[in-house]
Image (cartoon, rainbow, N blue to C red; front, top):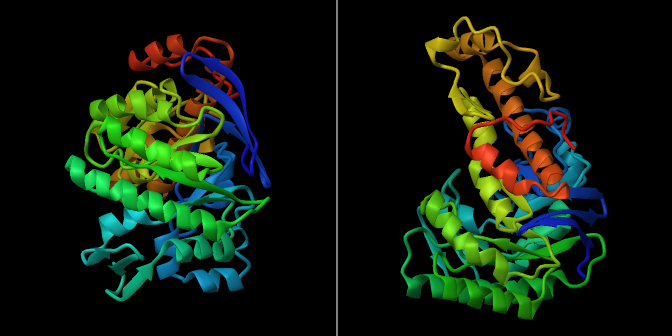
Length: 376
């Protein structure tokens, strides 16, 4: 059943609403995890993040091992105490960051060797070291296996090599992780956009056995339609009784379509990154607060979302802050965007429980705000 029980409370088509019961609290799914890469969700305090309705946040192994150092975080009480977040934390193993950030990288059977994007220093990350950092030093609640994430486009041969190395690394991660009651280990499905490879990867993951399963190697440049086509089969290859986590995704429409295909968990830097660049997400799509059309717009971003940033500031004021280069602009827009994402997840959960997810999905595509306005 896994270290953390996963209880599916309702299904509507392939969409699922459930609860992942962790040692630090329950996570209602579908769930969106704000990204706190270096131990902080950019521009926001942990109290602000918590106020949006976030139940779990994400940290990153590579960034934290490089700065301030995983051993230092451990000496300071672990990531929860260090960052002031006492609810569940999931840590990404760093495979994607090694692929995307390092100009000098070498992947071998034993480990990944890469250059720090901070100072160029050389580092080695093996499956065993990744588990030590995540589980023992950072104290993550949900630990991800170390995997090799290939850039897109990738040939079928290259994608196959990466998934098989990832599977071998995953088995080593499982051995290093051992049996733990208060932490969980997730495996990562790879295979790019090749259905046969996604199935092979899933079979290998299931043979090893994990507490949960992630879908990796998407949202790396293939586009929304290709991602959805891959999710049509990728999610279904994974065990139905364990949580399914789509890594690094995405825009609100990606979340809706991922839930429609049976995904339970998501993470992405987009809400805060967009907020720092003057972009806000709404039920009618994204808007750019740099635009002069908001200069005298006295309406809030969303008066129905229970968030100070969404409800208590006019678009005119936010436009002024953005145009003035005020730091507060990034704070308020990031805060609103995370609150919007959490409201979206809550309303999807409610729609699934009430058996009207497809209606919700059609309305979202049409740019219509859902009738219910209180997050569930």
